[in-house]
Length: 543
Image 1 (tube, one colour):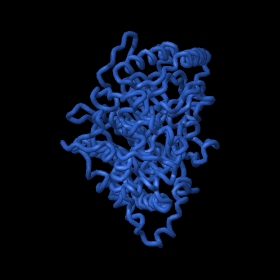
Image 2 (cartoon, rainbow, N blue to C red):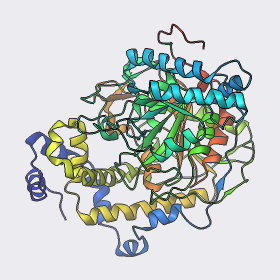
Image 3 (cartoon, one colour):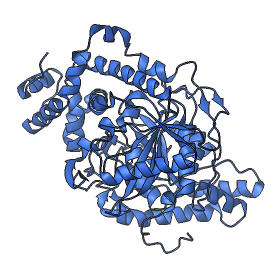
Image 4 (cartoon, rainbow, N blue to C red):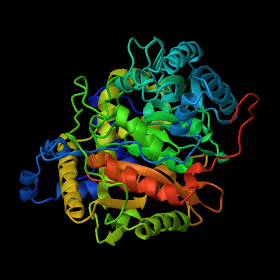
């Protein structure tokens, strides 16, 4: 089967009810041609491989009956500006929730003036919740996250607040109920203070037409990354200790990497997606962004759990099986496609992280993932096909979408059913490759992304050479979305351009505790996660 010509794409789209202009057809044809080697390999596989890889096995693998989840617990925390430090200050009477929420909202506004990170400030709602938290601290009934402010990416519902998804075409009416992740956090005492900037529908470019770009706190002429762009910028600026993001191809981990933060894409199904504007059934997750692993762990423990409203939601039995250090931890550091397009300063950060863990008692073992070379193209095939299906109902409004959104999801309009199903089979085969690696390793360490923060024009620089953002950004992160394994972005230092570098820790399904423990050990021996960018103007902040 040959790949369609530009005219063929136009004809196929017309039969499905889409009218495409010449520029969009050309963009689609270029994108399809770029994925051709990976898709051709799918089509040419022996029939025996088709019979051995049921497309439905991708979800079954994550939910295998023998899976267990390790207890994350309260990791040691030496950051006074983190969640633990704030809770200790409340307990000692050194701060009050009312003052802290007022500070967070003040600092968010100051950050927004410089970075454009916030879509909506939740002043009234947050003030009422702060008063309740103060009462609980006085009464001795404080909950695990009592009075801790947080931001919410604006694809996640908060009751009574519109969810815009960063688009002119969404979010005129307030949400009737909160997303399950927000409900869980509020039940634990945390207080949402903002709806944060996002690329349009979590799949657009750095310059969304409705709200504009979110700038990077470390370099104002760079992008904060996406799609959880405002969430990362607000945390990095110090306005809130943590925020919620979503991740379909790296959208928690990439902005975390580019703003010097720790960000978790959990195991598929570990955290509910109920109440989140959907993009991809296969790849989408919700995850926390914070400065350090200890804070991510605290939040993950609250968020994780089964939710009957999300059909993919599932968490296995939690067992006390994680040691408190990394002695004997086996680390695989694969090469190939995961590192071949990667800046030397980013690779140096990965090497430094591995060296620290080895010095703390871990060991490096062999482990390669050959299928990773095709993971980005095939992952995008699945994501864009599912996104095109979701957005087909609004095809008459695509003229009001971010052009980047249209160029990306339109690649899925004409995906043949056999290609989509074969891509799901590839997902199963990639999971088997990971099984082989995790039979001898506890953790895989790779670069989170191949460069430091992108320019606002949508380009990145790797070893002095300029590349398009989407050709580079998700080379290692898509592996986790496609297979369902958890991935944790961890700051490893700074490059010569003054921007952060990052490594990604990939663990077996439901082994977030392993990645978080390793990250905490690394962060206990380094100070990268405690560094802050030059502050924005603050008149009343007490930090």
